Image 1 (spheres, rainbow, N blue to C red):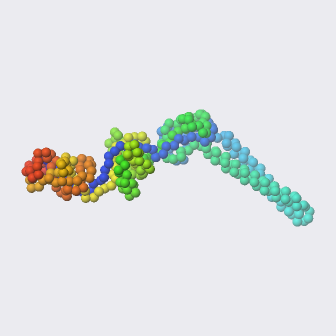
Image 2: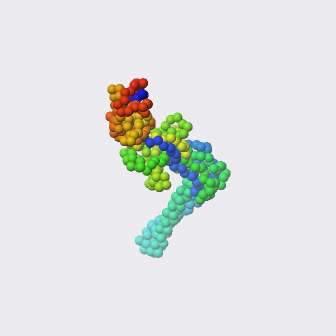
Image 3: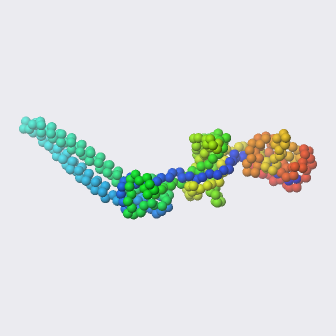
Length: 338
């Protein structure tokens, strides 16, 4: 007979599944004005920071409008100053009974109208400067751009929803989401893991040799009635861009860690009319021990009851045994680290 040791200790509640890496944000960068591309300032595929300039548009016309508005402001400012002087002069004459009240009122009206015109000019200048900012196209978030769809000299239009209206697509992949599906029966465990910040996720892109480490972030608001599954999202820092949007990943999801759990190798488990059992070797005899299984995990059976975790169990040759049979052990069982 070949035997192995049962074990007792901390066991993670592990679920293995597949997931898909998804960008944290994907933004189609478009122009808010009609113009001509004066120059692009980033290379295709470049990594950018929020605020980096992606392209500059021809802004000569809007700059001319700003100068025109500034000239109007200067004109109205001068007229306002003159109107204020007129008010002072007419009020002085009126005090000496050398003027009339109509002139004073007209001068005051001119002060008010020129002040209003100045406020309108200032608002117009502010509005034009906001529009001027649209001619410098900046990255709204950190991320990596794809291929620039426009080149120097190209004409672009605001509100163009076609593919040619997108200057470039910016993808934020650090941090990054990985989405995956789990049976709806696990929803309480998933929600508890998220609430306690205990959910651990390891993701390995198919073909890669290492895992990235992340945490459970959220669960979708509905259950898929067709499949009976929930969609769960894990988040990864992904500073090295190890995970790439769209990748299929092998996932190891730990929903909790159970303490003092007994487990045995899967090969030790037997089934009979009265349920599951294992053969325990005690003083050279094989004794039947009924057990209850919680779940199978990584080649072992996690037990709810039946063993204490210190026993030696038969993993090969059990079919020829009966309760109380003499056994001859052919190997020395190694103690399993829990």
